[in-house]
Image 1 (tube, rainbow, N blue to C red):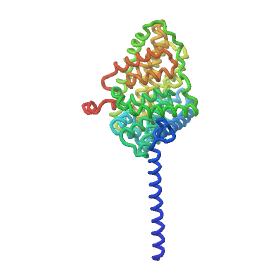
Image 2: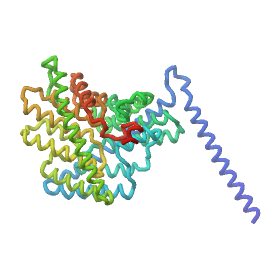
Image 3: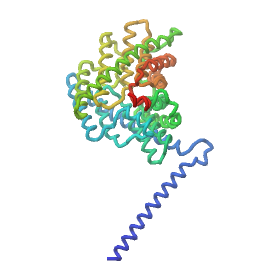
Image 4: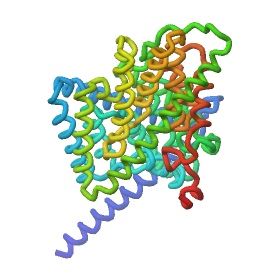
Length: 444
């Protein structure tokens, strides 16, 4: 018996010794990787490889997510007419069950808050809930896009990288922001716009505070763009077919400002509508799956009467631009799309509102062209898209670059003027509440 105990002790000691050796070897490898590559005369170190790897992983995640989402959208698109009402109601119910049982992944407010005030830490343990719930919400026809779920998943992947590599401070935050940029870039096919958006969304006045993350975001975005384009061939060119624009007046930028003022007014309407519905849903004391069910029921009714409001607008914007629609119908689409986005945001459905806001802007631009036929339709559409998005998200720089990339609109100046107009005419209290400073948040 004593001999057996001695053998067990020896075996246990060998195992412990092996674990210690493996840990020492891992630390040694990390220290080696931390040193610049000696054979390269360039600024080329472990960080570049990590940012590139993060971008590749972000591109793969985004590509797989998009393929599954497209399959789900095509599968559920067979339900039309009255059938869309129970389909969207049940999708909301199941999405609510996922959130209720697997954890609440939060919304864009939580992401921004964690980046600014929680040292950039995003919890990757809720990714399962975010992916499944957002696929149901977006795939069934909710008026929210996949950009927010992708930013959450890829950003938390960056946080996981930072945790494994024992990064601290701004290095850790930069890794998270680079992950966010990779997800956003993959969907929009705009590495520069996606990188700037990941900084600008954090705080409209203090984006320069996160300038250290700009190079990591650029690198991750470029690699993510390549991988995503190879997987799904999306983002290789403009995705929305705007009418051809030719500058007819040297004061076109002034017209862009006027159109953006109109778009900003509807941005205010959207924000008010969202806050009103949020207050109503907050008074409903019930589990989240009841709220998502009611939201799905309302969205299904809107989609039944106005099928063009279904889904988040990626394909519907082209349908809107290429179809001859009456002024009355466009006005109805504008009103009910704003309502649909507000319901989707406040009822617990998961997704992002950037592409749906672009849809609203495009609809408003077409209405302006209908009212004033002499107005260039492309100029009115692009200005309204820029104005309303900059008003709600307070991201004028990235909005300008994103729209130029997504539409192929070659005349850059009107988009910039429209974006700045929407930004400066935005409400004092931002729509994304975590964009406020801690002091203001406490006072509010």
